Image (tube, rainbow, N blue to C red; front, top):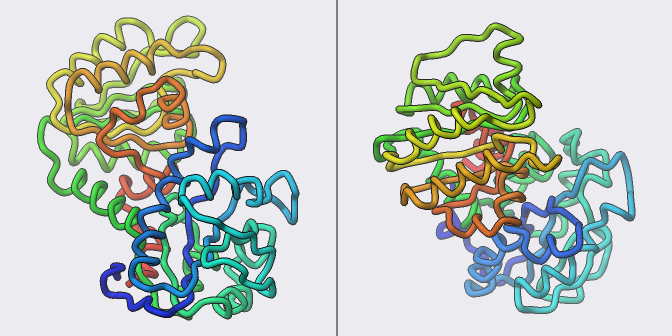
Length: 332
């Protein structure tokens, strides 16, 4: 994977693919970790003489232009985070008026998700080089993720580089005992993670809606996989499961967590809160990811207490499953 230090950006126009898919609720945008992640790379590029930077990404899954999902909505928070003026760029024909520009939602163009090469070529016309700092979308073979690196000199951004380093270390040489916590829903995306981590972790703790699906599908795992028991209302792990999970967490030196262990959106927060407290109090090196998990932990004031916060949900899961992510492969 090519790194920034090997990319000549002096006097160049840079297309910076960033993670912009953030919640738009009042109060959440300013605190969005994904927006904050882009600042170190922007500072590095400007510090190394970049002529200008076009920050581009997507929000949601629009089927076409949709004012509700315009990246214009994050323009002011981005200005605050970067500490500089940022202007808005509606399309590739717009005039560059500032050193840093924010591009419209890339998914407003169907060519983005279809990885249309002509769309990638149109984006390439506004830049001399390409930097990918959007780990959260690296499992998607989209035009701005895999097409642009074919057309421009390219490198990984600083946050993307750290994502790969952190998650690789977890898979290759974690300090032990190593505990993985897998929650949320979508059993089809979680089984590969559980199976792959079973060859690495000392314990895997499974919560969320997954225990129901595991029983329903009669799935079996290695004995190091502890499948939680849900309360009678099936919306949270029960007290006995919390106790088991806490026992495993207490002695851990490395912890990775993706997915809440209860349906906090409906008020079932106890399990997830207790697990978060145990991790923080235990002092292990902790990595957490997944949109639901990080949103909830941020609201509860726990997020900053984790050692590293991954910007990826699906991308993190696929990486931990041992899969190759197409956008990372495209960076060489």
